[in-house]
Image (cartoon, rainbow, N blue to C red; front, side, top):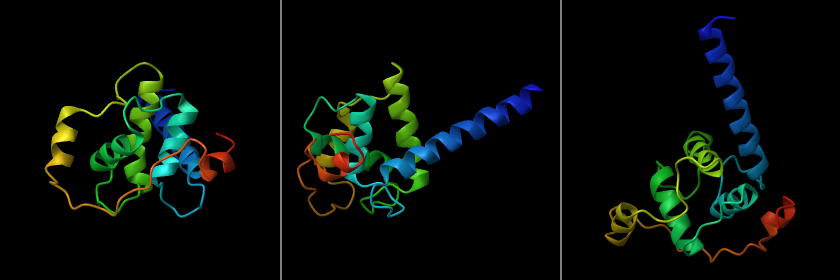
Length: 132
């Protein structure tokens, strides 16, 4: 097998893995990942935020929700998921809020969404996924 073929195989395997995770954590089958579903994923990876979960979710959606609609589409989820997995493996990504994100959200540089409910690890969605 050539290096190119191996690269394609690895990329396809990675894409399938991300797609399977997306389907698993899209608990309501809406075709998008919501804030509580993001927290369920992080709980499963053992990477719950060290900061207030609501603040952390705001930073995640500021960084990864490109169309600012309050949910992560599959394309948006790929970036977040890959960063979270890297962090779970001890490389990259942080569950603390970077200063630049804090500055962006405090200056209201992006349109504000409706306030998100406070997150709880006992959320019904995590329980439904068997993660609580």
